[in-house]
Length: 373
Length: 261
Image (cartoon, rainbow over all chains, first blue to last red; front, side):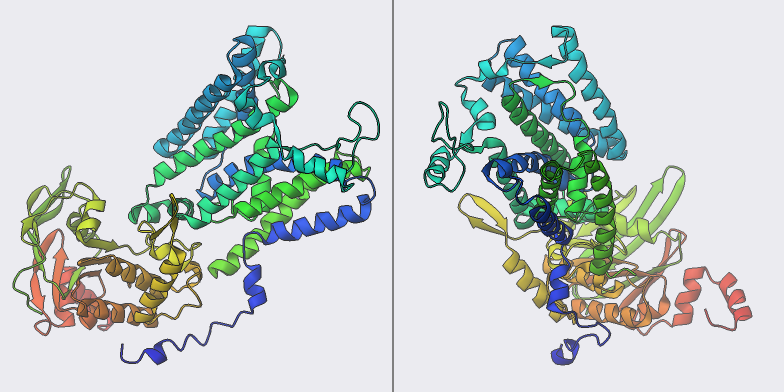
């Protein structure tokens, strides 16, 4: 202790890292690069196609927002060391519940939404409970729920209404306060003002002459932004966030340090279910109805967005901002291909390629962080 | 080094697992500020013994007094709260997390902003850097991932963490068994620093030289029994080695190996 100076002299074998390299070592790296790349690409190839005017931005903005909502849940869960493959089925199932409760049973829409959220959270908790109690991989447990929930999403409307699509939610939702939280728009005044000043497109003729084509920010987008911010703050700035990292990094070490790992994991499963239900509620309000096949494959798209965002499949590392960027890349590319006049099936090719690229990049970043060789 | 009252007094501890007798009447006293080495070969009952001490196992028979009071811990968290901390060889640190996040894992400092409570990263980073400097570890920064630290440094972080959070008894489960020479020296130096702060260190090892380097007293476990506790200077490395191995057999073996074991 007398000779602090020599002790702090450092290890001569640790190479100095430049600040630039240091800045690169962050989970969001892949997401940032990807975002810049896709925007550059579409500005060049689809810059004059209307992709970047107000309607175009709203178009890919909404698709991106959809991805973001489920990616935030999948991201926190993956960092906590688990997967949820039932997200897509949960979207279909929850949407169907809202439609059945409000249309078939005639409940007020707010009640239908609240009861659906309660059921979804309970299913999320059940998922988590089974995983932590049995110690089975969450991959298997939630795969079971992928089929169970999808099955119910088809069976319920088939049995009750003899069809797989239930419409008429729009009429039921008229004037409902909670429906507006998922299907409404905000900042309409701002958009009108932007239109009046000629900064965004307005209708040239017809009954809505003078009104902006995009007349407000959809609640779907608001939800996405709020969830991303809340998720990011919880993960990086709170005690619970530290527990999420710890639970996924090494559950045993976390338990030894007094982290309630099981509680953290179950809560994350519930949060994933919550995000899926937000997605479902927004979608039902937007389309005015629910379909049995809604949300198909969304679980994988969420996971891919999260991986592009730099999270490790093995847990313990990742970023909500990165996942949000991954979702943004998704939305921009999916819609951008349409604007650029490219066959839209190529989207899947792109998906596969970018996933591969992201995983390889993440592995490399992880090696740098942990000093593995 | 000889405080009047032992911090932990374990008397005639027996532990049975079904028909297996893991511990057959072990007695050990742990004093504050001493490094008590618990030696034993694999299967001697070291792990069972420390798990009993840290509240993971309940003894089948025998008494444990902690600070003069009969000790009863419902689970290991109670033991940690009472000041008995165990540092495991592997299960201590999370490589992907930063040193400061690891240091405060489970004990996160909180700062209130309005109705919300946030992880106080400034405080955590400052304390982590201070504590690491005290232990002679030079971090690039508090955000450095634990995965970049060497095995010895990780043990040191874990030890510093336990002491910072008020451990009175520090149980180190084979902290040096997977380490190289220089890293081992670092960990042993850390043990010495911690002992001088008045913390009782229980150092589990099967390496006699590591034990002799820092130990004040030595207890050898063999097949669930103790062969008594010896003070520093009263016992030689050869004697400890023989006691661990149960005498005869190793002596023969050692002869054939030229006394290098």
